[in-house]
Length: 276
Image 1 (cartoon, rainbow, N blue to C red):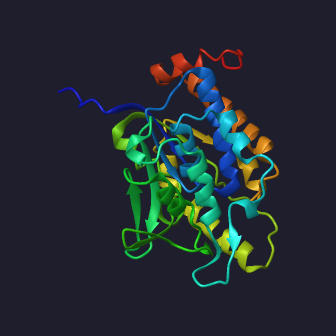
Image 2 (cartoon, rainbow, N blue to C red):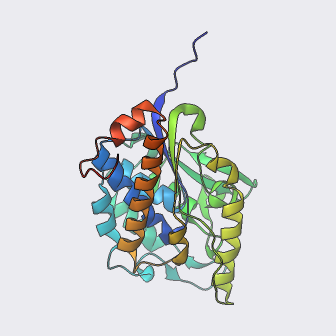
Image 3 (tube, rainbow, N blue to C red):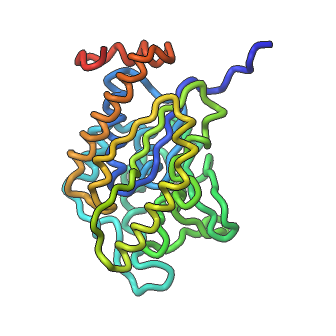
């Protein structure tokens, strides 16, 4: 008995990780060079932000240029703490200015945005509805930002339950390329409310990504991105290059192991001859 064909051949799952999410741009660059286009994207937090911009038709270079030279204060404004240290009005204004598509279901590449339902205590997938609100919810780190209210429900960062959303699309795809930009490496951190909160969330994100890592056909990770801070907007080029190099290494491994004919064909078309 033949297996039922899956609706998508290649899916792309993008983890959260704050500014480390700029490593996703390096992966996008290699996909562009290889002519390898995902047919569905799932993203959490920074992965949802990078993912929707890519799904909206922007190139890796164009997305990078949206952020280079900017400061954190251009995306968030300090407020008198009630439910969060910062509000996200400026972030939403940024999204509204740049997104060509307004609703998730209308994106050129189908996209799943993962957030956390704070009221019910569970993961939530946005597959339709306004993009701006869903991405804001997915990126909304508790304590740092106020929860996002959508249809009477409060949502926060999707990484609390599913920081690496491979399982979100696994059953729908023949192959899944997963990009995990949230490795946790030992390093000094400041004893402040903000830094302790970041560190705590990173432990949660790492723990809930273990099973999803095993579900990837191609797993792209780079420990080097762990050296960069959550809100680092000064090293975008470096972080992106780390993602690119990690993607090349992961693709080379697939070719060497002679796995996944469709992927190998695209990978071998790399114009710069970097892949065997």
